[in-house]
Amino acid sequence: MTRSRARRPNPEGWQGWDAYAPFYDWENAQTVGRRDVAFWRRLALGADGPVLELGCGTGRVSKPLLKAGVDLVGVDRSAGMLRRLRRYPNPKSRVPTRVVRADIRSLPFEDESFSMVIAPYGILQSLTRERDLVDALAATARVLTPGGTFGIDLVPDVPQWREYTNRVQFRGRAGARHLTLVESVRQDRRRRLTTFSQTYIERRGSEKREHTFNLTFRTLAVPQMVDRLETVGFRIDRVLGDYQGRPWDARADVWVILSTRS
Image (tube, rainbow, N blue to C red; front, side):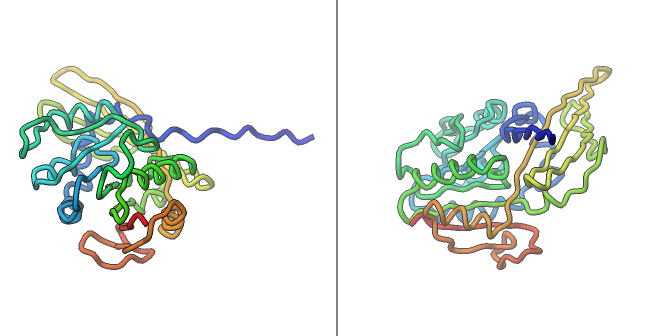
């Protein structure tokens, strides 16, 4: 008799981000930096009403948009990330940045509240199950006005990362701290999941602390994501291969999908 193997549940994509919060800005300054910010600023300044940013985190994109005068609301599930963003004052109104702690699968806003929703830097890839993605896309369609724009940015190279164990990725100073990032990568190609196991070694003088957590991402190809968008009522306007507006192809370093709520 053959014994069936129990199927392991997908790891929850929101897990790990509170632990990551103290290091997120430092790491991204070594990698993506601000190369996508000008694109999102141009797009958001063209909105005819409030803009919602999914997964606003510490404000890497939110802060430049607020400074440019965008009427922006941010939403994120991680309390640790949002604590850092809430310290940033809105330069136009001089009130704290408008951010909401919530799950993007069930947005706590009224129907048709926003003229644009943006999802920068692979935030939708943190949805590790198909049902999660469907719920988030449906929630986005609900809060968008008819004709409103939904902009998605995907990170295409995540499934191509080679597996490795305990590799030192970055070293450097962050204020009074010296940080070392030690990382391992695992691929579950059947479920399209990539898990980054990260250990940050933090040194302050003679003191040493280690912070370990996992981040898991699920990656769909552009045609698959387009299909999901159309299923919940979006019309695809453009698919871009970089932040300057060039057309997408399968070898592009960036996958940006711009769609309209029908």
